[in-house]
Amino acid sequence: MAHPKSRISKQRKRKRRTHKKLTSPGVTICKTTGEPHLYHRAYEVDGSLYYKGKVLVQAVEDED
Image 1 (cartoon, rainbow, N blue to C red):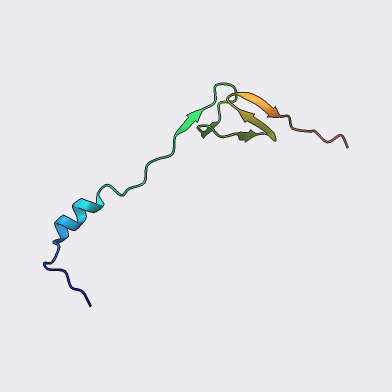
Image 2 (image 1 turned 90 degrees about the vertical axis):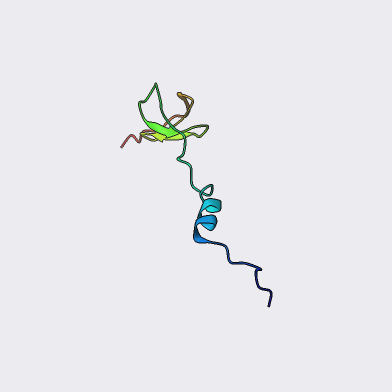
């Protein structure tokens, strides 16, 4: 089996791994509904589907 020529220190290994971290998702508040949602995604409020503050699919109300 192959062996490294010299051992990599903990500090050197951790420096390399500092760039591998998660970023927080971009969340915004809709001006129309006031609901938080992800950028460039459709979101649902009270059964209606919204995108960029406009209704894409209107919720259907049951008449019983």
